[in-house]
Length: 258
Image (cartoon, rainbow, N blue to C red):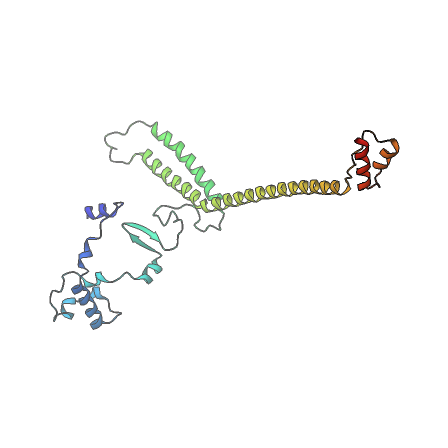
């Protein structure tokens, strides 16, 4: 049994030792046994040698061990065992009472646990004070050697109280995780809003600059080149905003330059 327990606790356990029983002959005997007794019969309570008296090589262990696990039983119990560890069908945090501890606070999560936790804390402080007093007592005499020391009882009670505080704190882990996730999502939402606001402001600035450039390109007027020998009348005529440079103006300017 010790070797089997050690093997179950092994991180990489070997196949179960009874896997060698799943032979074609044994599975055929199990099927025949079911056909003769019915599907609802309890195979552990019958004598398989009498039912299978016409068969050879009937094993000395119950053939019912070869049947598949009852899923309905697992769902009814709410847990199953694999390699020595207990796993719940629905993932949940087991309570202290389900783990075999002495639970001092309400098991219903909808009930306010603060009064019970305050009582546990006060009891822990009082027990710790009594533990210090017990440690200052003189050592027991030979006649009272069989009596359990008082400090040992206080240590055990402090251990129970500490287990309750830790179990109550673990029950709040889902609430803490949900609040942390909510804060994280709010922060991400605020960052995205700030980034979106910055992008909109940059887009508004670019649109204003483009509008200014568009307006400047539409209203800009290019002044014609003024010859160095042109007279005042010609300069004023060339610089007039309503004047359009013609081919005759260019030819006359070229003759004056040459």
